[in-house]
Amino acid sequence: KAGVTQTPRYLIKTRGQQVTLSCSPISGHRSVSWYQQTPGQGLQFLFEYFSETQRNKGNFPGRFSGRQFSNSRSEMNVSTLELGDSALYLCASSLGNRGNTEAFFGQGTRLTVV
Amino acid sequence: DAKTTQPTSMDCAEGRAANLPCNHSTISGNEYVYWYRQIHSQGPQYIIHGLKNNETNEMASLIITEDRKSSTLILPHATLRDTAVYYCLYSGNTPLVFGKGTRLSVIA
Image (cartoon, rainbow over all chains, first blue to last red; front, side):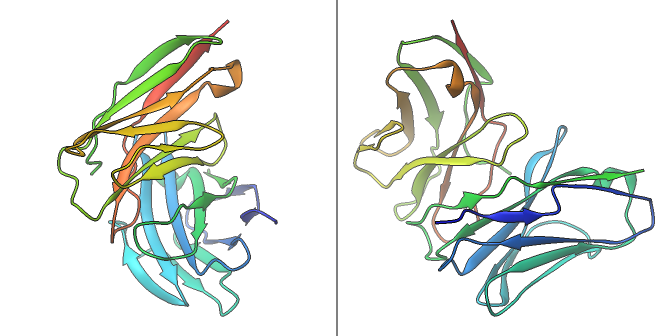
């Protein structure tokens, strides 16, 4: 079956702009989590959505937001982009059962803010 | 913050077993140990997970100590393609929290 699909793969934006990233999970998966990866901070958890509801949130400013649709596809939005938002943004999908479930990651969207 | 401790880097000769250790002394009884790896510029790849019994799949084996405070991921016959950053983490009711991982270099 198809894996996790993230679009676009690469993006260049200017400071102050906003950006929307998309994630299509594996069919049947109801949980989508988003992560930011930078060389300095590593993989950091942004938020998790399950059945269209935000279930967990990491320690990021309100400029970072997300949502999940009824078909489990998810989008994340970053407003008022800063240079420090340049990163690889990864989403992971899982069945959503707590504990005993593996997550599958997409290839990521590499965002460059100039 | 990551709650596991892993060596920063390790080397392994091609064809030999790679044994990657991880300490997770604060793990709770209902939390599973997970291992993922990330090859440069790709998304992390799930390897294996377990609760208290040893586990094996087509990729690796997971050995969890009886007190569950540490575990070892074993790649039985490492190849150059296994060069990656390996992350050990645990999770029960919380999202996956990644630490810095171990950078494994498989050498020909």
